Image (cartoon, rainbow over all chains, first blue to last red; front, side, top):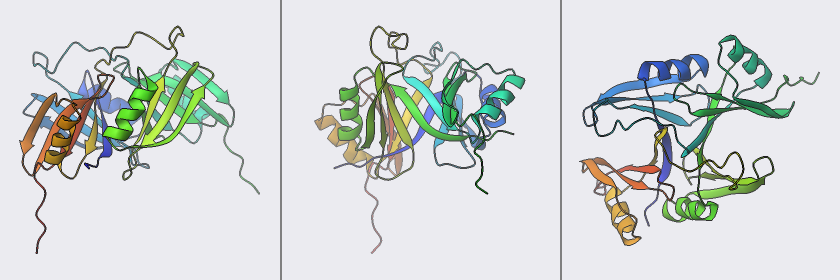
Length: 137
Length: 137
């Protein structure tokens, strides 16, 4: 029987520069590569967090090609989830960067989550404690 | 500065049983857990491939709640990618299971890709060689 390994999630982006800036500058991901693709006359890029093994691919299609359907984020992708060691601090930083929290924080101080939107309208779930964990003496 | 780790991809599904069946029976993922969620009056489930670290969350929202917007897969999620050691064999098996190949195979015999749709209309990219690699004697 055929075997499969889930290897990455590919999202479609409206503007490659803008989305790379969001995922690297706001969410701290590393750009592994960015390439033009002859078949779609577009581009794709691969990103990964400093820690963690999940991979995120960004796909951009040139307007006028059969791939470049009108963009609606839609319901298929519910959200991409990112863990952070201190959600309270992250929310304060996001507000300074004028990135609105579209929902939350929800949960307890020890474990909560909140949502922001990426430049394409894709929901990003941020997960972590609202307060820094106290270290034991 | 806040740090983030990309931890999973959450898709929205139309029917939880149907989507769990697809990702486990067709794509061989393992169901890690399935839980009801009070907040959305819905359910979520976490899946992972036998090998690999990517995690896939399935989200189902109860009709009539504010989360259960009319379902259109949309453009945000371009595709989920799965690697397979023998794409040619995988395609033959999928055809037997009456799962249509919606695009491809594209590429070379040594490295190709093809697309199927999940029960929600989400595109799944399958990547692998069309021929089994010959082992060196």
